[in-house]
Image (cartoon, rainbow, N blue to C red):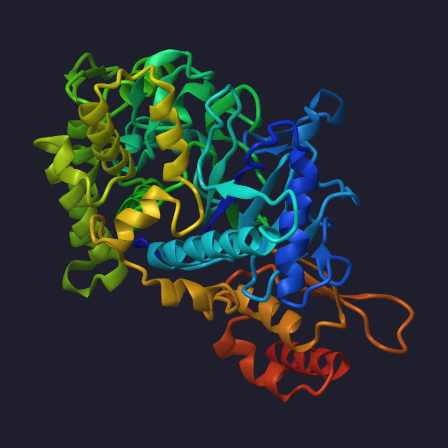
Length: 508
């Protein structure tokens, strides 16, 4: 495999009402979802989420957590009718996850498309904020991962992998990479510790909130390697690696490198291609120590006794990945993999010298350059609350207020995905995964679609007493090439079901 695989990004957005700190975030999050859905002609009761195949308590290590032992936040297979939850025509899910609006992107097949549909989610949230601005009290959203007061919310990545890959190998070989990946992909944060009480600046927003190496939880006792085994696909063939460690990225290059480098490392794990021992002593403690050192000069200890700088370990991963790709594909490697390897090398080369040289590509460096400007101008210490305000403003989704957006607009960070492309992705699904079929059904037969999930679409057929479920367990079926003509040629949902059934019969 190359960087190409089925993948996606889920982002919970920070939410607030300026001047009203006691506003109910769950109600506000519901307003975000319903307001945006209404702007696209979608009624929540019309295209809700189908929970039938959710298995959040199944653990990749081979057991199920008992429901009585699970934290309520883990029971994501129970529908809460009070929480807004819709499927969009671009194949994404927009819903209320506890006290945050969450955008879960549609499935894509490569890192660049992951960035495209993640940026589409930013525009979805910006549109909701714009529409709610005229409805008191209004609301604002932030693409970040902590409120700076002790709460953290996730940006989760998902990667489809071969079920044949032993999970113990994934844990052993992915953990050291995840510990140092934040050097390239952290979004930066003012404050040290879960409540930001200690003055300082660190690479990543999430690192201080992790407590264990491996586990099923996502909101407490957070693990570096999450073991949720919920493939949303043919379970005998696939596992979905659910990654909860990452930060929300604004820099396109960092987002691309985050997704692409991880996909390459996973390809090597699947092929059992690692021949170098890279395990780290005390991964959780080291994760936090790496985050706390923006100079990148401190060393980490490997289990073989070597001490190495985090960026040197990342360089080792890059060299192994580049050699793996060259040995396996040579000059036939696809353009997506070439792009990822190029930017991965470019970012590391900058970080190996003066880290500030990476400010055009890496979130934590770009943010730090802005913060240092304020510190120098006003002689501010890291404990000054004005710097925390700048940190929050960095992630503001509004184009005229968010500092990350303003840097991009003025050419101070490199943009890989033009806004026009992300705007199209707000409504259009990826054409090369089942997300296309999900979105096409919602667009063409909105009155017939009752619910949907990653692996099914549930429809109501006039005259039929029961609902009909259309399974799409194979993520690379339901593409535009595969079923586009069937959808386009169907005058109604009954005709579409008949056409799909005829294709299945002919395939048998």
